[in-house]
Structures are given as structure tokens and as C-alpha cells.
Image (tube, rainbow, N blue to C red; front, side, top):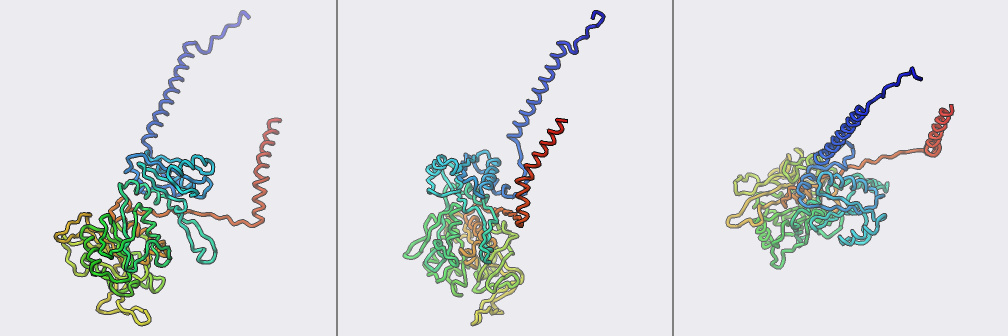
Length: 498
């Protein structure tokens, strides 16, 4: 119609262009902000532990080892994805990769990808048929952690007749960090187990007296082990970085003691585990040798009735702040037939003398007994015995003999008045295994290993349902949930029809 006015356009071409340009610039600015935020977040981020599962939290020791990496460390998880520990292993090692960009992690499922798995087995010369393992590769040197080593078990069910073994701890971080730290060392230290005097055998799997568990621990820590006999004029080898004297039963001759004394004077490292019970309550000669280094090894037995399960054992919680035991404070050690070990009484300290520090003591209710009745009961000698906090272990550092150069560095000695606590049947009790690890690390001067990493606890949940409750749950899952979805769809259809 002629009298109708033509309405003007809502937006002119210029205004539409301005709106388009404004939107385009806003989108570009938002995109730039997103890119910048991602750029900064990828290079300057901080991961926080929100989950209550402690298996994936890295300890300060692990961060120190990762910070020491200068080259790429390749980690291969050769695992069955359906294995119970796969998620824990994978999640923890991913945290290693997040914490250090020089750690690359590859997951290989030998069931789903047998070709790749065979390549890994051939490349690292792994034993055929070995399942579930983690391979660490640094500068062409490798270290393998087996899946069977990753769990800590509770055997109380078996001992009580229930025939149930529960997995209660995950040792992944301790083993993974130790593997990386061992690969960082230029050369594996060498430890010798002294033999020839009835000592514990590092090759024996015997429960009561065998020491194969301790030997295995040393190998896991990248320490090579070998037996050593000082008979036939043999000297302590030059490559001996740690000498272990574990529970000798017979007396040393003077020539052997001179060789050990010379080794210590030249900066040797000694772990002396002297059991008065195994030596049948007679000196072995090591007591006199250690007295030259300021250590008094008592000819006695130590008792602490308030911290004992039987008449012969001790549960020791009194640990000092020495680096060899400080990480264990708050834990306890389990000892058997222990004797006193501490600084020589009345010894005047001097700059050249060895520094002796107590590591472990009984409570204030402890006492020594240097005599035994014919029935085996302890009998106190009022002249020789004493009451109070009785030292059980000591550490020695420094000291030198006139005219003898310490070409191995500063002498270090750890002396324990007991040896059975590190035998196969007792090394897993309390914190005994951790003590062995920390003592060896201190003796070898490996500060990166000195902070212990305890196994992460594993929580298990059980649902106990009756047969009727199981039937109800089955109907809910099979009929209830699908039926609810069908009912909701039917109601929507009715609503749209209306």
C-alpha cells in the first residue's frame, strides 16, 4: 500500500561490520588468554594431593633423587593391565613423570601387545616368562623391580589358621626411588660378609639363622655382595666398601683381628652384629678390637620386662636423632638376646678420637645381667650390672691412628649387640628391615637414601551380604535400573504427546 511507510533496516551495513569485528576481536582475545594460560600452566604448575590414597604421594627423598637426574630416564611398565597392582604402579610412576620431565613412562601390556612385550624382553635381556615388572633405563644401565616385590603382606591369618594372606602395603615408591638412585651411582658399592667363624650365611634361606633376606636387600640397593674368609693369609680386598660381621660364634685369631683393624684404620666401613647368645656367652675378640674405637660391648644380656613379649626379646622404641635411625623415630625394633653396646665409660673425647654415638636404648626400666643361673635365669652382679636406659647399638665415625692414612675416607662403624634380628625369620618384624637399610646407607655415606620410605597402606573394604540381600541387589541391577530408564522415557513420550 502506498500510504505505508517502509521501515528502515534494523542495522546498517557499517554497524553490522562493527559488531562482527567486535565479536571477532573478543573471540581472538579469549583464545589468546586461553593459549597464554595453557602455556604458563604447562611450565609453571603445582600438583596438589587431594585424594586420600597415599600411594600416589611422593616423598621428599623421591623429589631429591628426581632433581639429581640430568639425562632421560626411561621407565617401562611391563604389566598385565588386569593385575591388582597395575593401577597403583601406573599412577605412581606417572607422578614421577609429572615431577620430573626427564622421566618418560611407557606402559606395555604383555597380553594385549605381545610383540612389543617381546621386544622389551629381548632389549633388556629379561627372563622369559617373568610377568609384571618395571624396568628403569638410565644411560644404558638398567634396574628391574618385579611385581612380586611390590606388596607387603599380613601373615597373621595364616599363623592363626585362617589361611588368609592379606596385602596391606604397597612398596612401590621405596623400590622405584631406590632403583633410580642406584642408577645414578657411577659404580655399585661392594659389601663382603665375613665367614669362617660360624657367622650367619648370606646364601642361606633358613628362617632362624639365614641371612639371604639381608643379602637381597643389599642387592636391591645396588650393592654387590660376596662372602669373605680371612684364612690363608688373605687380606681384606681393596674394593671392600662395607665389611659385615654377622653373629660370629667362634673366636677370631690375632692375625684376623689385625687385618680388620688395619682395614678400619684406613677408613673402612664395618657393620658388626655381635650376638652374645650365639657365641655361647664368650668373647670373640671383636669386643677388644671395637674397644680401641671407643665402643664398649658388654659381656651381658639386656632385659626390659615392660617392653618384652617373652623373657628373651626386646621391643625397643628409644631411638636417638642419629642419621642412621632418625627416620625410624616413632617406630620400634624387635631384638632377641641382646647385649649392651655403648661408648666406653670415662673415655675423654678428643679431636683425633673416634666419635661414638648411641643409636638405640631400652627404656628407663632396662637392666643388664652378666651372670646366669643354672636354669638360665638372669642374675645381676651388683658390681658389673646396672639399671636404667641401656644402650644396645652405637655408631662410630672418624678417628685415625698415628702414621696410618685413611685412604678410604672417614671410618664408620655400626655395632649392634644382636644379630638374630636381621635373620630371615625376624628381619620383617617391626622396623628391623628399615634399620638395616638406613644403617647400610649411613655406613656407605649415601645421603640420598637416608630418609626411609615406608610402604603405603592399602585399604580393603568388604561388603557382607546375605543371600536375600544378594537377590535384591541382583533385581535392582538387572530390572530396577533399566526399568527406571524405560519409565522415564515413557513419561517423556507422554508429555510430548500431550
